Image 1 (cartoon, helix red, strand yellow):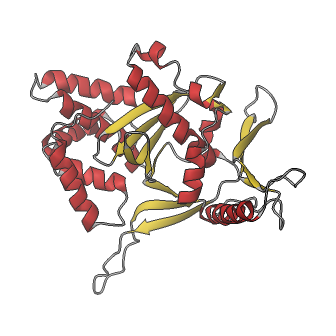
Image 2 (cartoon, rainbow, N blue to C red):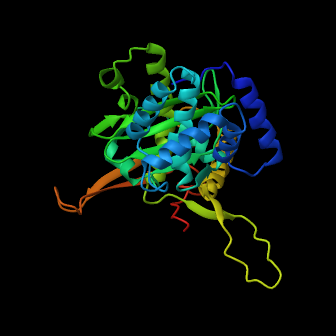
Image 3 (spheres, rainbow, N blue to C red):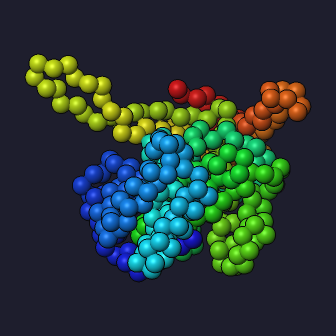
Length: 342
């Protein structure tokens, strides 16, 4: 759904204030601070109290259906005192932010790798089983990108096991767009991952369908990279500094969130290879009888099943095959295989 622009001016100003004062803080924490420091604070606290009372422990994952039922009951009980926009904003807050806070995981991709993945939107076929290898049930990809009309600052990713991958794309003005990838299907082309939305929801909004499909096509290769067996991820735990009290042993530092730096080595290699590619193309002619000029073979994925069919050992393996620089005079494959950094 789209956030309603009415009432968002103050929210965006508050968000920008916190962003300027906390330059290294990830966007989910800034958004949370923003929401509780605006007119939503009263309802945020009320919703949190009701949710806490309805659950055995606040550390449990919060399924969307359960959250929706709680909020619908509350909306009726308030008898119009809560606007539809407030209700939608708080559903967004509790579903995406509360579940993200259980894991506190941020993924920041090297810009060159991210651009390579999000612009390589050919209609590849993928098994939805691949998304079962996503690293956490909830996380945030903090990379900015543009589509034809909007500038996005990142995307929330939440996996409801065996149901769907829920995606929430956040614009720079905090208006959001959410859609799902259903997980109860087999092999599909990326553009078909949202094709059955009308049948599932009954929503026939053509603009929603078009934007859904385009955003999923952009982000699906990024998600597949995080599912790949040979992904490159460096984990950096960002911890809160503890002040040592005189005469007392200091308690362990609290981890605020984990900054997962993704593909910085392979991004540097792609950057280097592209520079060489441009040089060779400008230095060599393409006349008749000459060797084919250097060019890139686009990044793609290879997947295969291991284990006995219909057994618990059955597993889909996904591997990322990076861009290949073809007909380079020095080496055919400038971009090497990158192994995980744990």
